[in-house]
Every structure is written in C-alpha cells, then in structure tokens.
Image 1: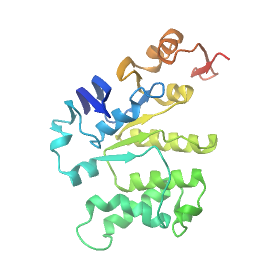
Image 2: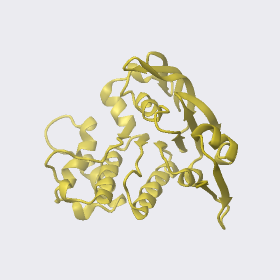
Image 3: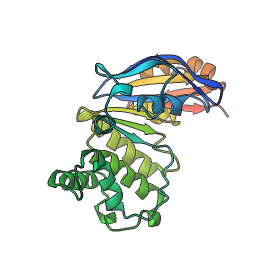
Image 4: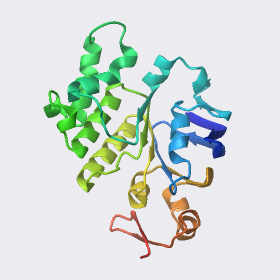
Length: 253
C-alpha cells in the first residue's frame, strides 16, 4: 500500500498541497484528475519521494519513503515524468537499459538485466527501435520507449504524470492498455490524466483535486457526476454512456 498521510507542500512561497491523505492499493489503477494548478504533479512527485513534504509523510507499506534507501526506493517505484523529451544522444535500447540502474553492481549488464530489458521492449513493441536514436523517433514511439524504461526496472509501483500528453489516440490507447496490464500483474499504478472519459473507463479509483485539496474521491460512478465535475472544473458537463456502459464525459460548448 502506498499511503499519503496529511501531506502539505509549499513551492515558491505558495502552499500547493493542503493536508492530503489518500491510500493507493497494489493491483489497482488510481487516477488523479483536476484543473491546471490543482496540485496534481506536486502530489505525484511527493508520492515518488521526488519532493520532500513540509509536513505529514508518504509510506510504502510500513516504511516512510523519506527513510528508504534511494536504490531500494528506485526498485520499488518507477516514475514516468510529464515531458517525454530526451535531450541527449542515445539509442532506445540504451535508454531502456537505464531502467536497470538501481540493480547494477558494476560495469555492464547482468543476465537478469538483459532479460528485463528484452521483456520490457517486447511488451511495448519497441524492439525494432533498439539501435535507433531516440531523437529520431516520433512522439508516440518515444513514449513507448520511455514506458519500456520504467518496465525494465520491474518496479512494484508505476507513477505516470500525464502519460497521454501530445499522443495520437492510437498511442494513447496503447499506453493505457500497458498501464492497465501492469495492474493485472499486481502492480500499483497512479497516473495523472486530463481525459475524463479515459479516466472513467480505466480507473479503479479516482482522486479529484482542486486548489491543493481532495475535492472528491471514489470510483468513477461515485465521483464522475455532473455537479461534482462542474464544481471542480467550473464548467458544465454532459455525461452519457456507450454501448458497453462506460461513461462518456464532455464539456458543454
């Protein structure tokens, strides 16, 4: 269990998180939603121990993340950042291999490293990019390679900050399916999305943030209601269902 206990965070003299408490379960897809500036990325960074909270704590099972050895923490939590840019000259295979860094004890890759890298690239269908420079890949191809880097580290948890940003629908669906597959394998996933319909379709648990506080929390059926969304996003919504009973959510234009 990944647990946020009354965490608060201040950035540049502005309090961006106010006493946030939330539980995230392994084997479940948890989605964080909210308007711009709500504190979504700040919360995810705290859950990954990339930012030190002002007060409260983030616990992984019974251990505070802040007290955990950095290498052990990196083996347990994989973080997929918001921007998919790679600003250095590197082939896709070498980039994916960086996911094994927390396991390395010397120079070179072990047999276990090679197996994990090959499995990750097979899962994301990126083997064909093994020797291609990442800078020459499309946005969707690069997103899959970055996902492979996370999977190569075989973490128990995947935290993804807007993994669908700037991707065509085809690649968005591929990334969502890959994340969902990880939960079926027992891993916990916490992701920030902006697409409300996608969130409702894939989430086991949804947290809606506004002004650094939890405004609503629960299943899609519980929280993806017109009045709740209107209060949080300050716009009106139409909510329907497709033939499979999944929610369809759109703004009123």
